[in-house]
Picture (cartoon, rainbow, N blue to C red):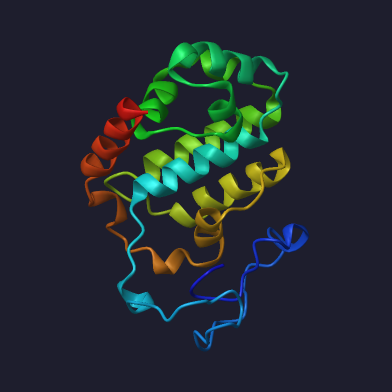
Length: 192
């Protein structure tokens, strides 16, 4: 559920087709999956860039061809650090994303659809979710969403925000440090 509009995560067929969803007029308990009164105003909600990166990476990996060279390379690259179930589910932490974006060989193992989506994802991470937002950020996000659609990636709530609520994200989104979030993910992965 989107707390700003009536987006329905189960309506896969219209996710990429409909960009403007009707606004949520009230948070009526029991209506449109709202079970509890919101603790804070939607204007005070902040989505950190790390969560966007993790969500986009998860959708990319889940849409990859399971028997393809790219997915096999991914499993071998992380090896014993990542279980088969976590690889298939696309569960990654920030440092793993950084490792993979710096690995040149990964791109050579992808099929054309995966490569287009991968390059678009790297462009969004560098030009939109980084410290400085590119002037053409809306076009960069649009290219990524088109590549994800062609790849067959299912739209998640984070992708929905980039697709329909880009104005909700502040222009200085990337200036917020992800260091604490990454440290938390690293500590949790060590405990696991």
